[in-house]
Length: 259
Image (cartoon, rainbow, N blue to C red; front, side):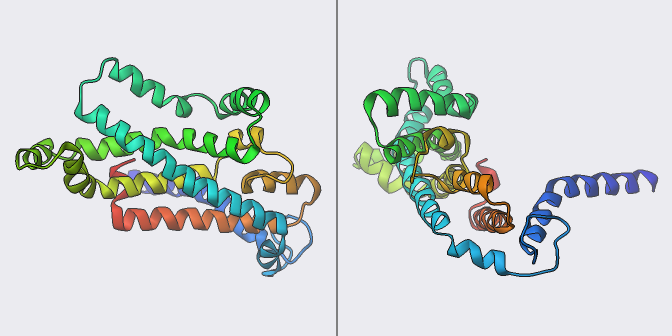
């Protein structure tokens, strides 16, 4: 009985450690006071409503959505063929290529951001938006390759070979047989890439500029001059959005099978 209670206590402490900050942020956003504080000074929804009134939040949210959606789509356009080639063919130095593809995950984001700033924005005179788009695509690409590769490894290759033997071209077999059977993995890769891109901070911090900032960077800048609970309210809304996306993905796609 003592061991059972000990396990319950450990689980409770673990959940408190993981979920506790989330509830603190929600409560801080509900404060009726003018400054960020916990426990909240009364309860009010005014700061949650103010989030939608701040113009910089609306602009940076639109930019973050653009980068997350189209950057992830670009990563999938590059990553799906790469995952297919690595899974179906014996490519020379295949393991080395996999390591190189995974580099944006392994290398700290600060280093990636500094490198992109130094070799894209400064010498090539790339616009900030284009540099951010390329950076977010590169950051999401490893997730696209790994998740789609996992889905391809679970698909029997003889299904594709049967389609080829029946007269279908290799490309036709991919679009008619392979892609429909790995669509859950592709959607899971899109969701993982979207969440990763939307919440990206280190790389975006280096590449953001005047008037062009992603939402997380805009929130950091906002807190430098204003310390009201609106940032806590926005953080709670973003956390709820991420949790909802992952919950829906797990419910309908079995998200945990791919990550």
